Length: 314
Length: 260
Image (tube, rainbow over all chains, first blue to last red; front, side):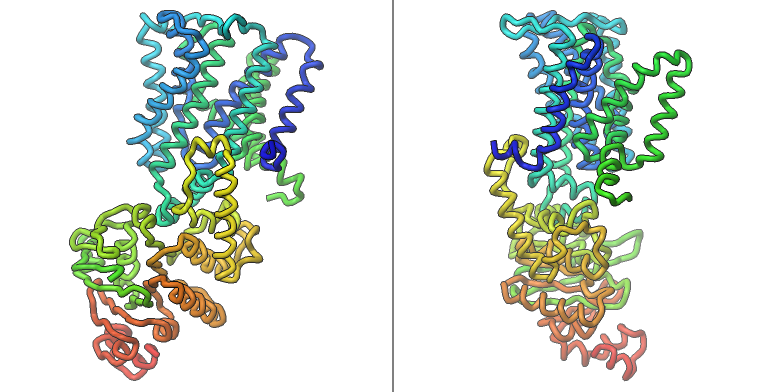
């Protein structure tokens, strides 16, 4: 209880308050839908931020884990009759295991090599999901059975809004906990100097692997939610563009800022919805806006705003 | 012997940076390694701390063969070091830098950290206290909460020492700690090193400041072109004509003077 009142989680308390106060102003269920998507992507972005923002390791293949989580709640309930909620955990476990096996050799690489290797991983998952049509329905995808918790059938955008928001807040809490711990300090240290970290006793490869696994689990759970919420899934969930989108959310919101991941996700989910009014120019305007953000708020939205509020612009 | 090298060799592109160097460091002493630029001093420290694996020869730490073992493994067994070119965690405050030095004494698993169990709080508090104490030993306690990126060069040098001290090493390798320090700072450094030795830390010092080296060293090992030239006490090394010659390239009275 004391931990909840501490300064460390004060920002999350504010986010929680906004989450609860906002819905009465939603004119339609569609707004709940967009809100749910924001929180689901923010959950994946928080996990990726632990890897990128804190440990300084870029993954261009994180949508691969979205896909594993997503198809876990599609395939296992459909063909094996398993309850969907157990498949969220099963998918997370599988993603963690895959991340461990893939990460062991990859995380010895540094810089761009790591980015390219993870890119390869993401593409590989998308190809497997497309080709194994017997199980996955191929490029057209498959429908995802509705989530049922005991007798409660989870449906409706408003319900998912609350589930996604609660899950994001839980995920963000765990992330902030980790940042303020021996492992969190070791990860930040690795980001700045691997050599100095190692001579202080930090097992660099092991710490990177651990955070890669954790971030994969975040992405997997987000992928499961996305599939359950949409009721349908295609291999696009693991596509290269999805991976880039996750990276963009982290960078836009602010590397190393947990609240920033929510802001980044909100911008990248909401902006395209608004910009559909522009039809053909949608992508061009979206690109220009993102460029503008990165030119004027170079450290990402949250860190830049915090710096402005603190009165010491950098 | 707390740290031993036995016919240690490594070459880079055909250049033998360290060539069959053997030395033994007795516990509780200040053991200095000197030599002209390019003599292989830093390379030798990199071999000791596991950043390089030797092509030939052995390294022993407290009697145990540790040749080719990883830096973090050695660090967990009490070997720590600082760097000639600073390796500071610039995204952190001074205190956080030193807190990382406590890593090998921290024992919380990632699951308890994610859940922030009370033991993590206790660990953080212990780490913070030990880090503050280490900062105080190098006179940086007032800078604890400043970002490392805002500290001047001399303070960063001391910050690295505090960070290494926080790990409570048995052997501490210092790579040119006085480089860029003014005479006052060098004097303070002298005091810091002496207090470490009093605490039982064995110090291996690579340094160009001959006044500091001659004042503080129990033994001095002289390298030139990757090979051992001489070893002895300050007085012995100073009066060794081969050392004097190699050091300044010519045998002269000035050279003897330069060596203090």
